[in-house]
Length: 285
Length: 285
Image 1 (tube, rainbow over the protein chains, first blue to last red):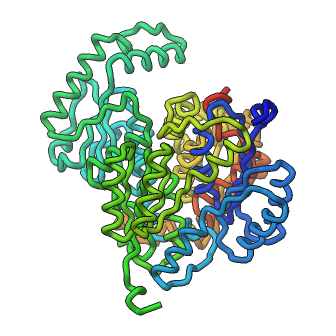
Image 2 (cartoon, chains in turn orange, blue):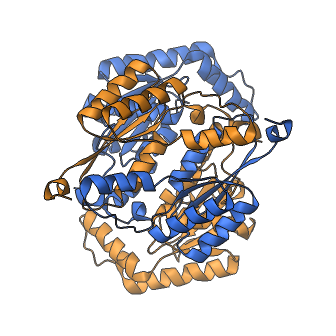
Image 3 (cartoon, each protein chain N blue to C red):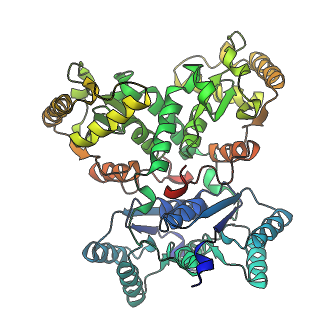
């Protein structure tokens, strides 16, 4: 490859008849493989007419973009295909292969309705409720939430309890979380629920020390406070581990994990990885 | 197709060397096209060894599953390909096509590192901060958040402010929201920020009436309270619209929109759809 290529910005065009979430995720996963390459990503969402699609394709051609599309209307799929072939534009039709395979297996014709994933069905409202639940019962605000929750997260400060709760809520799970500090009162509800619903989050003392120092600096405070003191952190973690053992719950060390990774581990540990949270309209209850 | 096919459960196997989010989204988008078909979805995540992959593939074969995979290690990609071809198992390699196309264009070799999308980089921490921000400044809890926010959502009760805030937070945007009730005090900070950052959410009175009646029923209360009274709802909406006009902000009616769709419209309206929130490690600041 030429030197010239090395400095070229690679442009993705996400073209979708809906919100474009699937193809955007794919573009991001691809980009993450090339930390030294410059990328731009353009999103053309809610493309449901030929006119809008042609406009997006012409625009993509101008940028010599990599086109990732998730279109369901057959005319639009064909238009995208023919345009890209004629213009020698790279295009990847992400949705058609699995859609056709399901048709082949089931003998059922797809509805070909754009945005079907986001229909305001029971599943959708369950997810919205789960998100509201996560905000309502974040940070131990109301221990009654533990009784209703599908998952209860415990952890010392800076073990990603809030973002994890929100991430799992997006998978229809009702999540409550409780920050652990040695002096804190442990709500009695924790002992009333199935320990299989509880996850104890922990972290390496050195990692917490680093994060907390940064947090103090961000607040414009002295980084060497009790909050970031390594001995204090160790005693907090010991208190947490002691509680986890008494509860008999799963323990996950988040030290080198992203929330996606931790969330996947939680789902595995709690046997929620399969089935439960990908519910389509007709088997929603 | 035979009758028999019609009743068969279609099974997806998501196989990923990371959290499997991309392929899961694709499976969901596919399933949404077949509201009458029964599906099951099995997720095999963090598959990074040949042994684990073979185990997953054997399991997928037992279920005669549709395999969607996002593997980056070349040996694993080849193993999955060869196994599926030999076993006549349907497989769709979602990640390889765009990864190879970027290599062709840039001349750069992909890192081939599993889970690169979830690296704990600046982008990641920005997103975590955005999620914490959304929870902290939800529901008008602290009007100082408006000054710091990238997006401020206003709306009467039941216009999806909280889930929208969380969804946008997941795209690295700092979002604060304020519920509007006619008697409420409008914080002075709203007049100090750029109206281009503000989105006024509205809804059809009939839709709100229906949602609120259901909410009252869910609470075990009489559905015909002032909260669900159509005239009261209309006056709330009029109050909101009047404020939106004074602020000069964008107005979006969420009546028939999912949060994904509303979020996409907000991003479009605020010119945030492209670039801004898909930041890779090296262009994070």
